[in-house]
Length: 252
Length: 254
Image (cartoon, rainbow over all chains, first blue to last red; front, top):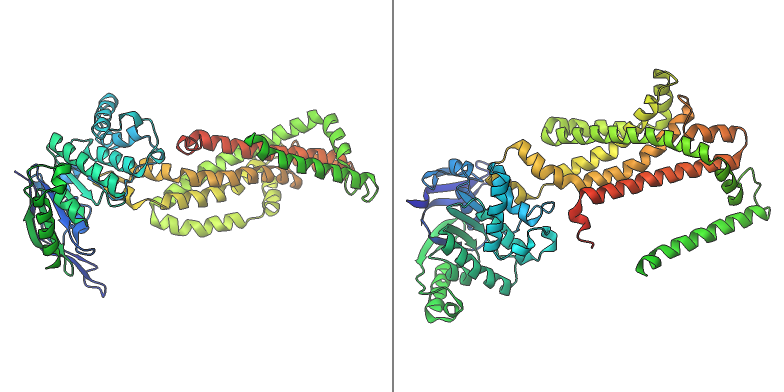
């Protein structure tokens, strides 16, 4: 079964008005189970819109979006995905632990079960000691890790991420990339990852989807077959060759 | 040491000001019936301490009842106004009209509407005065929602009421308390001033007018100080409550 299947999707904002914008035009995309797919492209190419369509936070003008074998709206109601944004978007009035518990709370999971699951998720992102802290007491990188833990709390089969490391410094970003890969490998989660960093897309992905703007569409799909994903991989000739491929595809 | 440094200058300034006041009055530049000396006011305050306390408790109860009642109604009204567009658009001008109602216009009417033994008119005045700042601030807070929070709650398929309870209300708390801080002082002023216009005469306002009517100015001032302290108590209690209710703000300071 495929995690995400998008067929003939178009999205037009402000249809029929003077400021009509075609954000996406005739997009097809498939994400297999357990696959890590990055969406990359210039600003305005519709990559965030595409992610929001998968998340059912906005509806397509034409075409169908299927998530975990269901229509996107049904998948959202069943919490089939976890989502993280560029802003961590933590609730400052809740402790770190209760932030992670929130999606479980909405699912009416029992208090004890919530607590166990939150501890498990915080351990996964290496923040076990910070459960009782408030978000404002954490650094930006730690907040983003909490957001990832929250996205994973319901054990969703799909993880959606919209430039989650965009606001972080290079060193924190690389560390979190490595952590994210480990987490995805451990949990078997499929991932759709929006980024504007070529190196990030290549390092993380099984497949990089290159998009272009006006109208937003997919121009190339590049399979990434790196033997390993570690510090050595970042220095390897294969890695640099793939970065060049993606760069060329973006320029084309 | 740091604490001392922040508290010392205002205390010194206060002592200097009182000394200057005492000297100016004592050296005969100001007639005692215009402005009594601090020592005379202090003597009255000590002598009348029982009366000042009783009157302050009566006015305090009125102000508290008004503050709590007005604030609860204000928060509920703001919730409704943020939830339903129509109420929101209609309510703000209405609230502005309410806030423009002067106490001096309202108090005599309300005092005549109820029996002279009723505390209700003064409490209503305090409540109406407290309503406006709490309503406006809460409404602004409820309307300001982080777009990331909204998308996140949408992704959880959370309903309107869940969203209000988990996101809107806690997010609006800092705004609610900004309103409450303003309202707490205003409620005390309203409860005191409302007595100038009839009604039950057992609070600070009535004591101040009657002392002034007997040209007992030091005594009138002693009750004014009582009103001043009462206002401070209300304000500081609100600050304390704010810290207790929003630990995530306080925790950052320590």
